[in-house]
Image (spheres, rainbow, N blue to C red):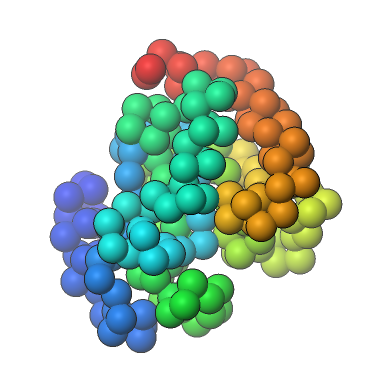
Length: 193
């Protein structure tokens, strides 16, 4: 258990718990406001993220930023973004369950330090790991689930929207629902901008 983000980051970048450390360029810990009420969690870094050391910076990240900005969310001001695994799986494959299990304590520590009110799971992998194992993203995206002290919402992964642009209107509707829930549960999120 870590008492600060600097301590967590320092230890996380040294992690060698699973084989993903062998091929990584950077450990992608996360980015954003470390006191955010809203935490976005993806599955793992892709190539651009691995090279730059920041989550969601490729084409999918640009789409995510655009959709967040449309509802007054900003990765550098009022939210935090992290991933289930902190190192890139080769060829952007899904992180294996054992890799997720090896890495989940880093995320648990981040959640404890941030203490968000709302957690948004970006994509099937994140939603099934954190909300429920049988979650069906195409059916349950945009719904809110109470998990302990957190409100959790699964959303389409930005990369999935790029592959299937027909999902874009539904994805944007989910962001509108998220904005309304933020105003209800943690209105100070919008005072950060």
